[in-house]
Amino acid sequence: MSNAVPLAPTGAAAVQPVDLDRPWHWLALGWQDMRRAPAISLAYGALAVVSSYLLTFGLWAYEMPYLVLPLGAGFMLVGPVLVVGLYETSRRLHAGEPVALGDALLAFRRNPLQMALLGLTLMLALLFWVRIALFIFVLFFHQQPPTFDALVATVFFSSASLPFLVVGHAAGAVLAAAVFAISAVSIPMLLDRPGTNVFTAITSSIGVVIVNFRAMAFWAALIVIFTTAGIATLYFGLLVTLPLIGHATWHAYKDLVPERPA
Image (cartoon, rainbow, N blue to C red; front, top):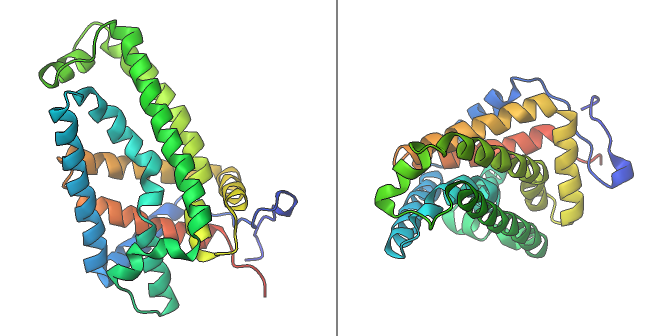
């Protein structure tokens, strides 16, 4: 790892520069982990599918279908903290340790306080995004949120649809970019190095994005594409795409943040 870029003045870990096409390698390694631990991987994917349907039906039952779209987009904001068990599974596989669903579900025990703080940060970002999304809707449509039957027609086929979608996507992209920068490798780092605090992990994650901006932008785009594909297939695609991204994120972290010298 002689090419690692030190970021010691900020307290962050060193960062390994990688090529633009490196995310494909992370996905390949993630797919291998899925094949080595299919039960755990598919269990997380199935949990994502079931949770998505429960959330959608809950919003419909409480006459809040207008939150389906912002919460669907917001899923990518909190996703990193929801798949800690997949990171733990990949960590165990490549450490030669046995893997089990129980160990995956209890992965937070390795660094509970710091992971909780980062999880709270991501949850606040999600709540902020929902507020922003509602404000943008009211700004353009000047009406009460639409019913489920009128949601698609209002959002995509009205006279205000184009400016609404442009502004909404721009606002979402800015927030998503900021959240991605602080969470790209921070949670895997907190898991892998229990003595690390949340500030060091976030600083390291931002450093990874800065040093490897092109590769990380490509990786972020792939995450959006895979997650959107999973949601667009009536959530069933999440059965595969969620664990694939989760395992691949672990390998991204191991590739981008070199081991500390002995």
